[in-house]
Amino acid sequence: MFETLAVVGATGAVGRIVLDQLADRDFPYKRIKLLASQRSVGREVQVKDQTVKIELLAPGAFQDVDLVIASTPDEVSADFAPYAVKEGAVVVDESGFWRMDPTVPLIIPEVNPQAIAGHQGILASPNCSTTQMVVALAPLHQACRVKRVVVSTYQATSGAGLAGNVELESSVRAHLDGGANQPETFQYPIGFNLIPQIGGEKHQGYTSEEMKMVYETRKILGDEDIQVCPTAVRVPVMTGHSESILVETEEPISVEKAIELFNAAPGITVVDDLDRKQYPMPKDCVGKDDVFVGRIRADISGNGHGIAFWCVSDNLRKGAATNAVQIAELLQSSVASA
Ligand SMILES: NC(=O)c1ccc[n+]([C@@H]2O[C@H](COP(=O)([O-])OP(=O)(O)OC[C@H]3O[C@@H](n4cnc5c(N)ncnc54)[C@H](OP(=O)(O)O)[C@@H]3O)[C@@H](O)[C@H]2O)c1
Image (cartoon, rainbow, N blue to C red):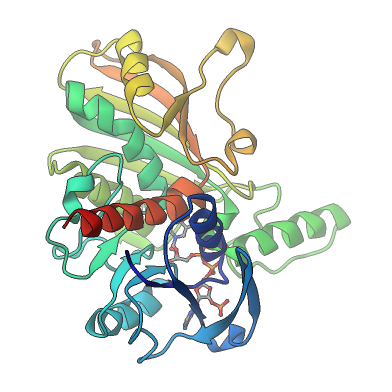
């Protein structure tokens, strides 16, 4: 068992859910430390039946720590993860900084649990929009080999952290009051609006958020030939990312086959009955750990090798905290069986 666990970024949108998940999933540990920035030091947080004070993330903080679950900005993870490993901890990191490092496994436990073997102290959890898409693509890839994906995302404001939700509220209020609201987290007011830019320009007009979906999908599925054409859009929804996905496969695939594959795959719930107006929506998926798929239909523009579907998941849970805690559980069972 990992005796001492540290949750880094415990005060953030993801960190708070990590604490809930550790409790809900009964993750075993003897002691827990909560770390964040100077802004939060001394704040008290209830963890199960204990009150725990937030400590400062700084060198020396991991001397007595076995396992870290971290959700901090990229530059913070870049800085602390190496010294946490030097001090003897294994780090499960949610930030974008380590994901494409060849020495760092990038893991979705339902898809590539074997990738934890041979880790060198840091393990990464994928970007939230990648995770839900790859959970859904994995069974299709295994059965029919995915060649190409065209995806448009509808990403919730909590994907930008606690500040994103605060800004959605103030933006909606300002809009209703007829006043002006100066956006800080997003490029434009997000209330009653959509913003077709998440991240900065990264590659041939695609943003950094979009290119994460390209690179991370290939790394997790272990197939550098998969072509992904993403468009990432911020929408005025607090929690729950949605995606419209068109998949082209090497082998022919029918709607019935795709539904059978989704139903048999771990972590996927099919909600698909157009006549009864049944399909996944963010408000129904918040607080749940599965990836929900619906609107499953043939690609009528294609040649029997394509499936279109709609995919929704709670970005703070499977897109972040749940996936990280599942990686920690994998590590726990590999330690127990060693
Ligand atoms: N939100 C999502 O849906 C999602 C999904 C997947 C991955 N992620 C990734 O997870 C990470 C955290 O995201 P979030 O949404 O939870 O953001 P957030 O709500 O802004 O929380 C950030 C956390 O990092 C801490 N932090 C910031 N600067 C720090 C510093 N210099 N030293 C120590 N701690 C510091 C904050 O502590 P203070 O409270 O003390 O400032 C807070 O606990 C990001 O890398 C994000 O890309 C997020």
